[in-house]
Amino acid sequence: MGTSAVIKIEGITWAELYKHFDGYPESTLPWLESFNKDFTKNRGNDPEYKFAQLIRSSVRDGGEFDLDMSKYTGWGVVKCKSYYGDYTYILKSDGSVTVE
Image 1 (spheres, rainbow, N blue to C red):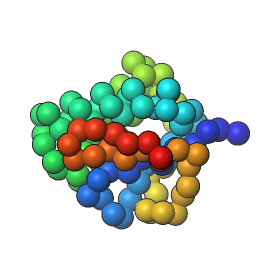
Image 2: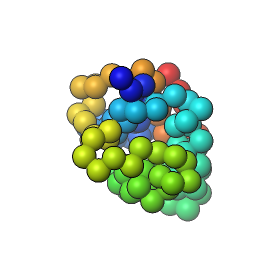
Image 3: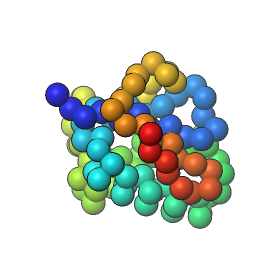
């Protein structure tokens, strides 16, 4: 059984990214911090684009951050509050990431 995570984008209230495997902070947080810092620096506060680019980053940066590269399982876009992970990450508009 995987250690799941839900990844939320501040300003998005209708969808979240569900990560089924390896949701531990030591595995997931470096990727999210790198992504959110870079996105915010270069694009600012744009939650819809951040959400889309986060999904693309899970593939584009998967090798660098050892993310699950499964083709058919492991990731999902889910309705807010419909999935609960072992960890919840919130990508803030200031470029920081919180873990709950």
